[in-house]
Length: 316
Image 1 (cartoon, one colour):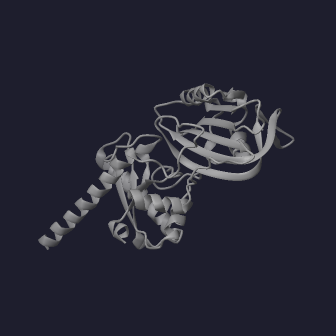
Image 2 (cartoon, one colour; image 1 turned 90 degrees about the vertical axis):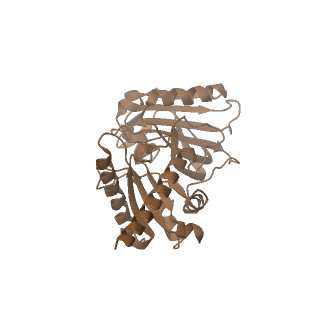
């Protein structure tokens, strides 16, 4: 009995060490997706999501938004066809929206972009209109006073020059997001990798771990409506042999034991949700590390969720 206890203790210690090392290494890692070549990201931010729309009829808003006869509209806008790259960045809470707005605006000015329109706060109109009617992304909804919008283009003498729409919002839960749409009229040669299930799986195999975007808790026992488990489910469905540790990190106020317990609850909740989506329970081991792996930067990373590849999967 004593030998079995010692053996199990050693195994648990080794597993914890692996998770800690993987989490600390994530400070140096990149996200699944990369930045667009036309724009550099804000320091201490991470990519939460990337999408790409090919050859669409795009409307660039050039005034504040209002609702007229049940329809959201703007007094000025431009329309053109092109390929659109959409990137959501989550920014560390130590910064504010003005910091992020100034960073991107100055960067674009230095690259000789022409400013077409900008607004801040309530003068932009309802954040609900921007999030749900214009950008169709619920995670961008927040108090009107915390929003910024900027529209620019590279070369005013060329109709087909790239255009950029930037929207910044600090949500009610204090999470800060910068959303960028880069429109390349007539097509693009600068398309970046999309965070697809295959990319998730490839990165997980190469790095041994990955930070999961689009996961946000409401308390410790439920996810917010904006959270999205589809990427994890699709990745695990793409390769039924992959086995993972589902690792929840949690910082903030409270003693270590409490944070460890809460993060374990969160990991257990996520595991059950994935099982409910059809993932085999034997493929997922839930672990809560609380504040024990703080080595990360960008976004709200102290409360991040990571997938860590189980060694048996890595060997296979």
